[in-house]
Image 1 (tube, rainbow, N blue to C red):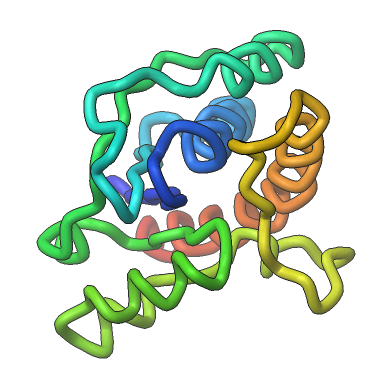
Image 2 (spheres, rainbow, N blue to C red):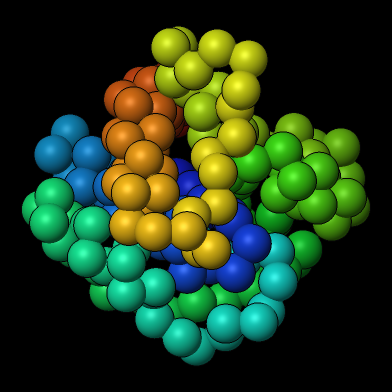
Length: 163
């Protein structure tokens, strides 16, 4: 059975497609590509159908990640097919939990940086959209720092299902 993870930010053109690409690479390197499905969405639909922001693409490609993406808006109905919904900041966390019709669905929503033991109390990945390239590079660093912890949690669930 496939374990499904969806990353969510505001417009699905900066942070969440970056997290999707990075985490998919971690999943593939771990040999879990056949067991884990990774995608992303936004809380809003302003950019639906658009590719990732060119700065997101530039930072991903400069660091060896693939970046094939079309933005879409998160739908409440998706909770039934998803195992884990990863919010990129507390605003997304709150919005997603409000969308959840059932407590079990709200319980699927987690902050990405909660998987980074060095993150401290600030668990938001700042939105780089209105800034410069360095904000996208900082975003990538935060995503990369949280990915091993997230992978460990996902691996635990996947291996638990296989048992």
